[in-house]
Length: 217
Image 1 (cartoon, rainbow, N blue to C red):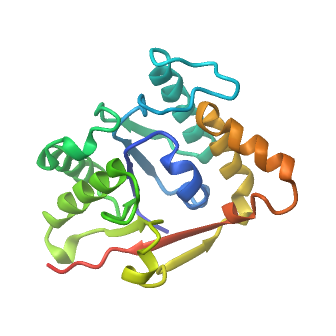
Image 2 (cartoon, helix red, strand yellow):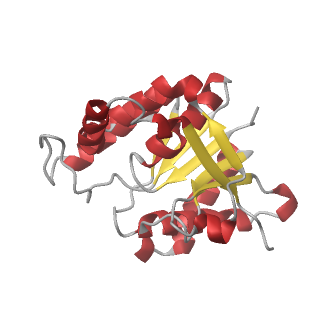
């Protein structure tokens, strides 16, 4: 059992597809979870299927969707850090790392989950992961929490090797699907299409993969 899990992602719904099963399993064990979400995803292109949001209303809608997803997973401590969507790569990395360092100092996590810098496709994902790594590098090596990274770039296994952790989350798949569905503005079309396909269309959701970050210094 982990002492405390800290999750750091840039957008609402980043947690849902890749790690919500793992987080639900930690929550069921009674592990405290803090989720630091950098933005409200206000620049997202999806407005619902059919559309029910617009550019002005989307941030508030996504904020409420994120809260509902956290409730489905079992996360009680959600931190909204207030950065702007699609600008994380242009922010001062020291500033973001400072914010993350403060949360690490407060929560004292034994495990941090974030994106693997350079292997997470979206510039916000990579910049978020880099800021987390920067924050953790400030801690003496022997005192650092473990960092589990999500990666899905085409070359991630070629460069990083096979994932260190492949977790079967089928025991909590109902909670994972509920978390995904909570992000209705972004996921309703996808989930509807998967439902129509039937069969094993959602089978891939039952497995979550992580790479343990390897420290050079």
